[in-house]
Length: 283
Image (cartoon, rainbow, N blue to C red; front, side, top):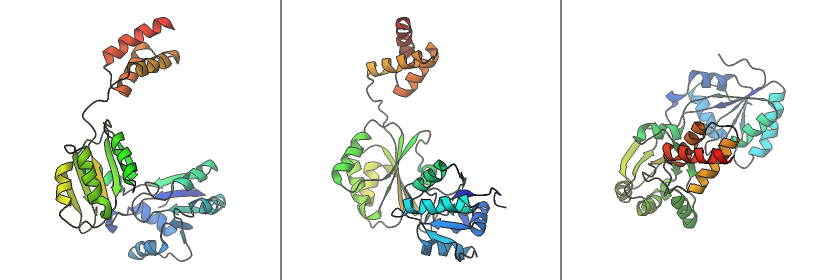
């Protein structure tokens, strides 16, 4: 059964490809919602039809070009007590897809936003990558312009977290070739057509994968997962000391301030603690 909250926006995750991944709760929301807002009504009608759900008079378009305007309609419906569902063409709305603005608008209006979680291309790719997942960042789609991509790659030089991004099949070979120039030995996973008939997971060093992809045609939806840097960025002592001073002034114990700075900047806990002791005497 669906949640019986009167007036709410429900963010519903839909399958990346395999229709069997639609959860029973998500299916129930799609079947009973007063209105379903989606990127492409034609695409969503296929999903509805596959699950024997009638979309009559309940499907409305909400995409990157009309999200701001449609937010007012969503808010009006929820205010009248309706259950409004938001879906994207695939996966979880708002993750490099429309949805963030309408969620923010509904929340700002003081109305209920909840979720029927499920498929996400980012999490799916991370789960099969075989690369550290304790800390990661999601970068969305790489920029189209070479200069902007170069700036991104430069910012990844000392990035220790695992990096996830989307790429189009038309640009993947070029992007991987550029990545190989910057990070040839980092581990990477290219996940293509996740959960679909032609799913493919390619793992190896960036140079190895770039070389392999350069020799073939690439099709489908693509997520790239690349390991972060093993080298710690240089620590600016003054930056760490400023952080310690702020934490101590805010009431942290010497130990807590040192632990916080150590985890944030990668400096040893012992060194941070010694600096914190000296700083505390000046407060």
